[in-house]
Image (cartoon, one colour):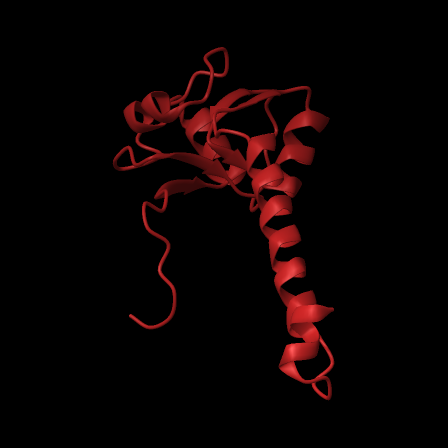
Length: 130
């Protein structure tokens, strides 16, 4: 493969709300239970459990459901909350410590570039005295 490959990338099952509605209509999925990986596998909606389930926005959902999933697209979230469903996202949120580390790294980079921007017409020995 070419380019950058993300190590330890999560492999998610992608499920459409329309497919969930089909399983509900067929009686394979119970509307009172929370929709999670185990329930989706037992209902035959997904073949195997990967790292989690992501609900994407294709299809129409007509029944209120509660979700325990790894991720939800914006359009699917809107459709689920419109029906009064509850969504629990199991994916870890980015920590604030990572943002601080990025800010420190950026500050160090700015200092290094400011040293590189010294005027070139000044001789080296003058820089040492300066």
